[in-house]
Length: 269
Image (cartoon, rainbow, N blue to C red; front, side):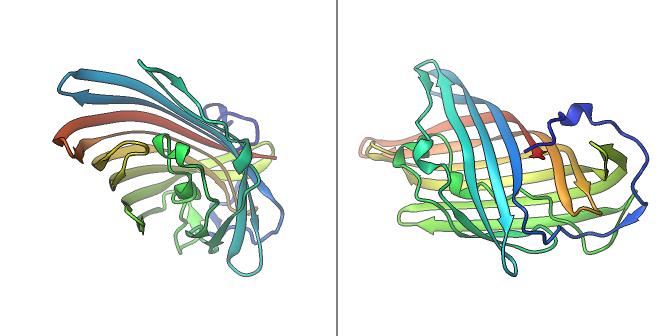
C-alpha cells in the first residue's frame, strides 16, 4: 500500500468537490499497495497465559482485466509469530508472483475466484486466501459528499475438505472531510466495524481439531480519491476475543483468545 506518506501524516486541506463519483477506476494500470498488520495475541490456558505477537508485511499488486475480472499477486511478503517458544517466520519466496483471480465491481465488492496454493506451514500463521475479503472499501450507490453515511454488511464463508471458515462484518462509514495526498484530491472517510468469525479445522501436524469463535470491533479511516477512482490509504485498529475449543483423542479443552491489532494500507505510486 503506498503513496509513501503515513496516514497519520496526511495533510488535510480543502480541494476535492463536495459531490463526487462513487466508483473505482476501470483502468488496467497495475495498482500496488503496501499492507502491514501487527497484532498482540493472548491465549489463556489452564496452565496460564501465553502472549504472542504476529506480523504480516506485504506488497500487493492488483490489475483490473476485462469486465469485472482482476488479477493480483504478492510482490513481497513477510509473515511470522513471536512467542515464548521463539520466533517463527516461514520462507515466502515460492508464493511471490503466484496469481489470485478475483472479481471486483465498480464499487469495490470483491469475490475470490481462485487463490494460489499456499504451503501447509502457513496455516499456523495466517490464511492468505482471505487477503482480499476486506481489502477495498465498499462504496455506496450515492455520490460521495461530506457528511454522507452508509452501512455495508459483508458475509463470507468457505469450506475446503475438513476446514470451515465464516466471517461477518457490519461496517458504518461517514465522509468526514476533503484532503489532498501528493497533489491528488481525496476524501477522508471514517469507519467502524462490528466483526464476528468462526474457524474450524485440524491443527497442522497434530492429532487435534480446533474451533474458534471470535467477536470484536475495529475503527479507523480510509482515504479515497473519487475523481481518480483510487484507494489511497487506510488505517484501522481493533480488538477481538473469544473461545477456542480443542478436541482430540485426549478429550476436549477450552481456551480463551484475545488480540488487538493495527492494519495499515498505503497505495504505492
